[in-house]
Image (cartoon, rainbow, N blue to C red; front, side):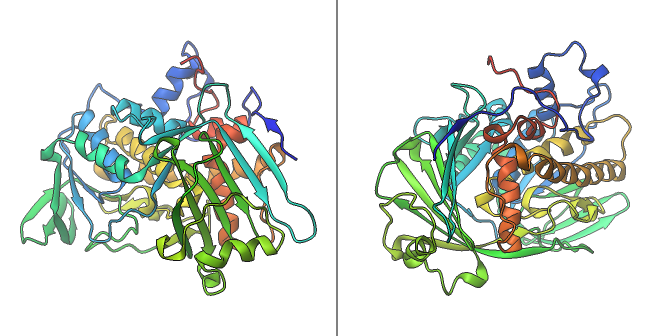
Length: 438
């Protein structure tokens, strides 16, 4: 069965510690509330833009945060991490993240490199019954709920927009030494510099020389990706299928001219599910067929990715301390299949920027406010997922491995605009939805 459904037109129950009160929202348009939540929300009366910020990690999150700092008048420095790499060929950006990219003059909906997503279909394979198929549309006609962007193009576009003085990609960290009056950073070339704040935006959260008392509880997943040799039937649709031990996605890429096939499985299942045989084995257990054109095994790219398994109960110290803060996967690693990390990482960067520019804030106060808010925000997100489970048809994987349950939970957040108005509202960090007339 295939049905078309759209989220409810009203939002309820989606609140967050960073959202404005009803009194504060009075007189604002919905769109201005969304933009304040996602773009600025800074205190311009007494800015502290003289603070020196070091961003570690040439990831989408790291590059975006560096650009946001530059646009707000800071003089940040972005340096590489030896483990920096592209985890996936495609980056899924929900509406709020696209709005930030627009503010940075990054055209994520470019016809050559980005695909505005209008529909998402999802299926769940079962051994005892024919799998159901549901197609759900974006929140309003003509308004994409998300954009799928070619990751190499996105990282290049962000780098090209960033002034050269903010990049030092030929340098890497050697040691970090937090002091009372700053952070002493020694690079591999032997040069030592001082910074007020270091932002860890790496993929693995292990900026060289950094130590922290708590590590996130994670499990590992094996991810396989390849471009199918057939064009997508619907170039504006993402197709997903859940099995008892795997998650399969087909995402339109290259402006809708090609399809990226992604297979995500718990690493313990890798020996029994190879890229070449995995789809046949999964379909044998009653799962749906979601398309052909699969390339031979030697054309698949494989990588191991980490996925947090606590999803809301994490220790707030994961987000920072001692003049060092974590942003994106450095604090909360998630699999690319969730589509969660770029959006949440960019949101975290915006939150850090907001805290940095507030009046009369010491660095320790900034870090304390940031870590507290991120911890609360993550709990709010998970509660919203649990509260909205009955409001949409996205699969609930109660019998699947815990790590896949967590992937499914975070995937619902990334697909908020396609599933439920409360999920969509919580993407923006507000009960008020953005103006759809734009």
